[in-house]
Length: 86
Image 1 (tube, rainbow, N blue to C red):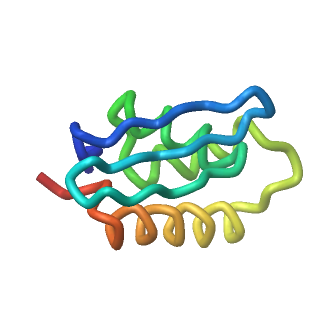
Image 2 (cartoon, rainbow, N blue to C red):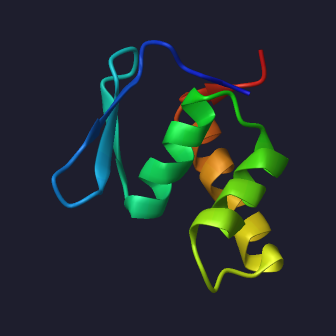
């Protein structure tokens, strides 16, 4: 998975973030978990690695919930042309 290289993420003072895609002139807000996952994607993480990182970083998250949350996050990024397979 590759992040859209035109998109930028700005982390806010409270740990949330905003992603802007200049190709579509669209923005997407991220909660703290979304910011964490975005940073993992910047490091080259794939979906299984995102789930592992989520479970390692946030206490109380089950593997089932982490898998669902990561899948939803990845699908939201793809729907906004922020993530591709190539």
